Length: 42
Image (cartoon, rainbow, N blue to C red; front, side, top):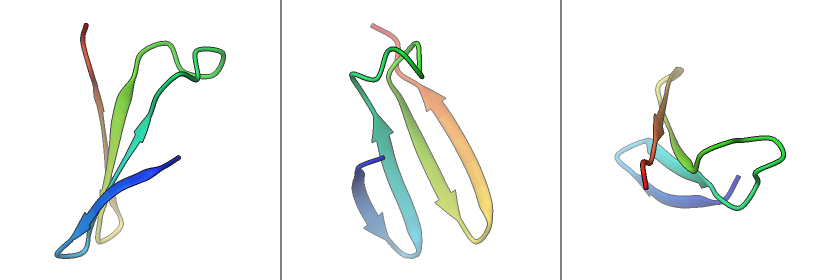
Protein backbone atom coordinates (compact mmCIF):
# COMPACT_ATOMS: atom_id res chain seq x y z
CA UNK A 1 0.00 0.00 0.00
CA UNK A 2 1.81 3.14 -1.17
CA UNK A 3 1.80 6.00 1.33
CA UNK A 4 0.88 9.24 -0.45
CA UNK A 5 0.95 11.63 2.51
CA UNK A 6 1.91 11.80 6.16
CA UNK A 7 1.20 14.91 8.26
CA UNK A 8 0.40 15.65 11.93
CA UNK A 9 0.50 11.92 12.61
CA UNK A 10 -2.10 11.17 9.90
CA UNK A 11 -1.06 8.52 7.39
CA UNK A 12 -2.81 8.50 3.98
CA UNK A 13 -2.32 5.55 1.61
CA UNK A 14 -4.03 4.55 -1.62
CA UNK A 15 -4.82 1.28 -3.38
CA UNK A 16 -5.00 1.36 -7.15
CA UNK A 17 -4.74 -1.10 -10.05
CA UNK A 18 -5.17 -4.07 -7.67
CA UNK A 19 -8.50 -5.28 -9.02
CA UNK A 20 -7.95 -8.90 -7.92
CA UNK A 21 -7.98 -7.94 -4.21
CA UNK A 22 -9.86 -4.62 -4.30
CA UNK A 23 -12.77 -3.79 -6.59
CA UNK A 24 -12.59 0.01 -6.49
CA UNK A 25 -9.70 2.39 -5.95
CA UNK A 26 -9.81 3.62 -2.37
CA UNK A 27 -7.86 5.55 0.25
CA UNK A 28 -6.90 4.35 3.71
CA UNK A 29 -6.38 6.87 6.50
CA UNK A 30 -4.86 6.03 9.90
CA UNK A 31 -4.49 8.20 12.97
CA UNK A 32 -3.79 7.22 16.58
CA UNK A 33 -5.01 3.66 16.16
CA UNK A 34 -8.15 4.69 14.24
CA UNK A 35 -8.70 3.62 10.63
CA UNK A 36 -10.92 4.80 7.78
CA UNK A 37 -11.35 3.58 4.22
CA UNK A 38 -12.84 5.87 1.57
CA UNK A 39 -13.77 4.58 -1.91
CA UNK A 40 -13.14 6.71 -4.99
CA UNK A 41 -16.00 6.75 -7.47
CA UNK A 42 -15.34 7.05 -11.22
